[in-house]
Length: 146
Picture 1: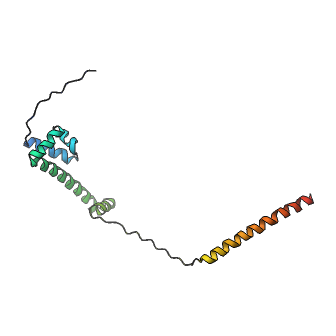
Picture 2: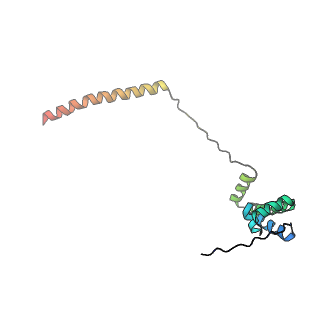
Picture 3: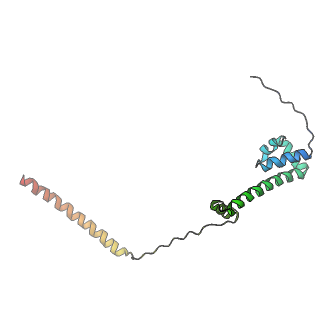
């Protein structure tokens, strides 16, 4: 396996019309950071330096993002206006911070008494104790019959 040397030459950084167009197109695709720089034909360090030297490069990125967002918003709005309820709900939720009301109504017709609940539980315990005492006697009586 051989390693190919990449020629490194210092390039002059200018915000030319072609370079700004490539930044705009990359941003319109939704790319950010290093990916945007590489897609625009620059090294990431070159792109950052260009943005520092010439604010128009950053403006091209912002314009690309804004145009893409506007185009997609128009598509969603057209779909919603054409009767796509899912698109309409997504626009309401994400753009207008709309949340469907969730109400839960509970009607309790019977009141719960703690005292009566404890009395019923105690009665069940007494019934179980009486049944456990009676069962061995019944079993012994059955054995005597055999």
